[in-house]
Image (tube, rainbow, N blue to C red):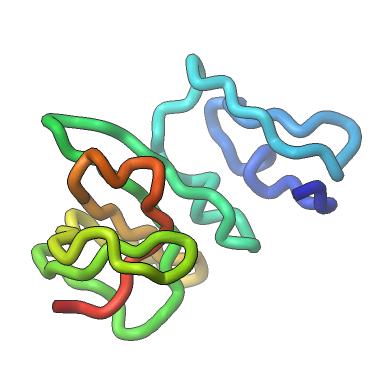
Length: 125
């Protein structure tokens, strides 16, 4: 959606995100420059960015997470789609990056078939 926002563009240390002079434009990503670091996801005030990667037959996502309790590495949570429906009950918490004044970024792994449906995590198992 077109909204006046550009923290993703200004926070990217690799200049991989471009919005341009009209701050209402939808961001464009140069995937040749993007390293998947997740700094943009941490900077986005709308929690609208997630980073996806496929490795060894699994889909890995870096997602912003602002609820308590925070997940713990090694726990299994449920993977959900944008409607809250459970996709995979074996979503593994791989990493939790928490900083004092920023959004926590949680890295999760799920089965690759859910790559295009995944939206978030819910309810620790």
